Image (cartoon, rainbow, N blue to C red):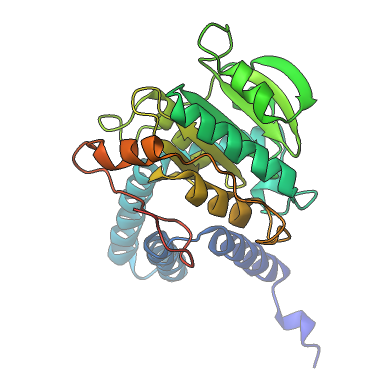
Length: 300
């Protein structure tokens, strides 16, 4: 008996494509609650497909179809940011970013981490607002920003970052894009996030907005009003943090190859900077030091 003759090729192709799409979706979801919602939705879709195979159940089929449609609309509202990012990546043809398979693995040198930490600490002490975007492999392009800024293409240094965020310069209001050990552009205008509009300023909303769309991207934020240091990653914001805490986070996020002894502690957390972190009053609802690195202890 020919076994292949009993198998419908179209049904086999349908099952393989659906399974591949399901595996791709599950591999891209990290949060448990989102994973539960996705499992429930896929269960309803599978149930609807199974019921439609039987023509003798018209009422059940219509009820299940209506339930799937209602859930689809609800998920479209809940995941509007993720769906927008999906359409943008498909439109620009960046399948490597979509599949979570960047072209090359990002590793930052100890000098890069030290320069970023030193610049952020000195900007925090002088209460000069700053927003530094670090591309860790998301392949950020000009079309990903509201305004791509002015090309710089210079070697990263704390002195250059301080000059770019000086109050009397035309580029200090935008963000600085950093890739590897180079500053790519300055004066970049980022898309804003819709979460926490009443709690955060424009810089923090911009940091949340770009990290919501791209997983392999982080933002260092310095508040102009209080000098508070913050770090945004995957649409979550940790604030306030000290310079030493920022150094630990950058070492963990920018590359595990950087050892604890290879980066010298940057002595920029003065008593005045520590006092400003302790004395400032945060708005209600803002979590203090909500870490997105579970193995590290948050500095309060």
